[in-house]
Image 1 (cartoon, rainbow, N blue to C red):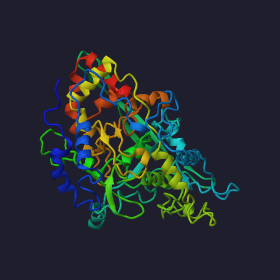
Image 2: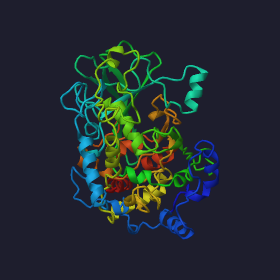
Image 3: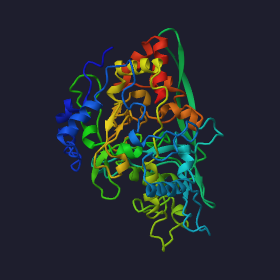
Image 4: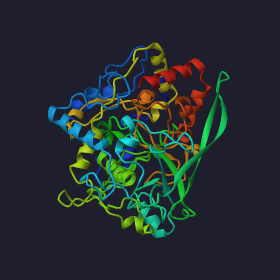
Length: 509
């Protein structure tokens, strides 16, 4: 057994990565400053990829470190708090959970502090899309619910000024002139919804080594029942299902330097992998930070990710996104004139702090469940293949979080997210025609894999990738192109039994 010939490992390209990134993210630390020299050596030793697949690694069964949930594996496996939260923090977690699951209502309403929904929206609660805090799904047919998948709307920059605005990340994309940044398929009473997203699939047969055949379905998106006239002629549609939200606080606690050290935009090591670090503006300060959340790494923090969902999916204003009309554009005048849910005694937004703070805290502290079958011979064989064919070039196995993490429960934990949180070219097959911040239409953030094997247990389906086109893990791997095509081809050409072992490994995560 051997590792990829030139693994992109932390310190090897540290200098190149920091030089490329430093001019872009001035506030980002280029080197970990939270560790002593002794700590640095310990962290480098424990996070080095293993080459021993005869037994599980120490602590491998605890992917979230001391925060890992040991609760029974069932439909609530993604709904437990970090195991090491203190008593007062557990109270905040429960308050955040109540707000995360709260059903917002339209204004005006006698239910004060719960109104302000929309006027245009996709769901009435955070929980509606992130059901059981897990993965969303595409509509199963034209009549099916699409509440856990949205269509993002974007057009290219039209002028040099707009291109400069995008390059400076003053916006992450340009919205449709009439319909805004995403299609809202529901509206409050008295207002028309924007339309209804539809999807059709065409299938392509793929033959794997050993003669197994797989049908991959390629989606085509459109909008029916447009409520406000035609979409812009240059507007494109990109579908996004809701991401699982376990372990987000741990991701936030990973040192910037550890992520930047794996960036290799010029592919100087010649391994065919050239991950790029995304930039994102902090919603409150406007400062550029390292993007690490969202399908295109367009948000720097859990709070930013939460406020984006409040305004885009629910039409609820927050201190970080104070427009109480949500995604209604100036071309939708009746929408902007609808009543809003601001309760002046509580603040000047519909979800003033501490609402956003508590929802953020809840999202940061949803625990990653313990691994299953970590010592199974088949799982270990699959892990060996995962490493050998180069999957870990992007799906980085482990990190040690910052010693000075804001939440002490998440500080200095050995965690196993299996992601480098960088942008990678995933090929034309997954291109969506939209630039989002630094991400081109072919680039996607490497998603963390922890909990991926519990998707069916938690959500009752196995739809993967950004738009849920893959119906199982095998299809998801076969959609990998671009920088990941070599690993994809190695999987496709492996013996059927070896492929089953790799899937068993993923199912154990």
